[in-house]
Image 1 (tube, rainbow, N blue to C red):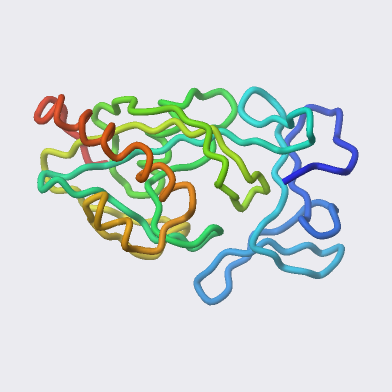
Image 2: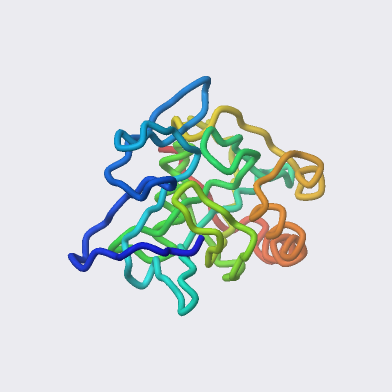
Amino acid sequence: MKITFPLPADGKTHSYCINCHAEPIKKVYKHGSVGFYCAACGRTSTRYIHLALDDRNWIDETGELHHTTAGAVVRNMEGKYLFLERTEYPPGYNFPAGHVEAGEDALEAAGRELQEETGVKAGKLRHVVTAEVPVDSCSGGADTHEWHVYLEQLHQPAQVTLNDEHRHVVWLTLQEALGRKLPPAIRFLIEHYAVKIEQEAALHPSEDLAIQG
């Protein structure tokens, strides 16, 4: 998304309506899905504009907004991966993932998102890939993201506890996942990096234990 309105100079985080660019907006839930309500124009949209301009979120020379995302690819003992059905835009089955926040690096963000979204505490996340994903429209208004993907291998059953960002859990091989509804970014990552994910998993088949908590 291109930013075409004047930007704040106060260094603070701002959340704007995607329609009229007013702030603030309010997160609302309807029929099991997330929306963002603007009191100024009275509209509820699946997206808003999240601006916290720093090294994690930036606007390029064309006015395009970029965000940084970290995610955990969780593999169980049967060689299947954890996918969570989203309640927030974009719909589909996602890896545990989210935006990197102020004061944390991508590894910390991946571990935090894993625990927040599933209740599973990371044992040892292994970096798999960092990639610019140009087909990733998020609820926060960016249409391109820098993704940092980490692998977490489980060596005991994990009890997954979802937060309100997701409604359903499935364990799938990466090829099986391609037959499901996926957000464009997840499909892009699997299509381009499935071999690399599987190779990394094969290199460390039994070293680390993810602890539930």
